[in-house]
Length: 341
Image (cartoon, rainbow, N blue to C red; front, side, top):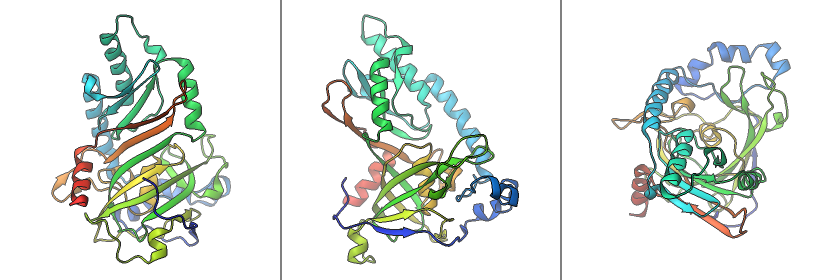
């Protein structure tokens, strides 16, 4: 969905650090990882992550979710109803929440062989976009190495357009459209974290580098309502740009709001949307790794609510424009139905 208006983006550079005030963040300010990151030696040698490490509570929950997903994935199989698009070069399917992408690939292999007389080699199939375990939605698989290489280049060149829906619980945004630009990388203990944009290119522990990541967000509703009466005209129709240089200034209010957003990632980093939602003070519901609530209004959530809504790109062989859209999961359907009513 295009952004409203065409005004020049408003540039905001985060300039003064203010700690997240959530209980998880306060606890982790005293964690061994955080203390290690803040030692003079570490500050001298490596960039310091600007988002908090995963909360302690997430370790056991993530392990439990991983075991459950492994069991589900081992038994998973696709049906023709799950296929969103197919031709002789590509097939796109609707990935469910809680299923690993590797199972999607093997299931596509079985589905194609059941439909066709000749056997399709598993080695020829390639995942063009890899969704997280608990992210649902459009997943594209190419049927040959040649097509895979062309589509990978399209993703690398950022010519593939992607939209996601996310249901978040956090501080009600004071913006309607925003672009956030930051660094991205693994911290000393392997967790993905947000880094300053000025740290892009610097070496991280383990020898990897801070890479750039950019996401634009559009608020669709706050507590089921799609209007923003508190915003001025420039805030409503403009598009703010945050270039991350310090820790987030956004505090986690005790009075949390339900926020439905559409995200347009302009790069494709691991956990990109989840990290940026956390930084903006609106972690995704169920995303315990990045401070999302796992219990909300007497309901326990077994995974984060993030859905790959659509992919659009130029077909790598025919050159035609392709738009692939996935059916909405129940949580997204309910949120959008509430908005329309």
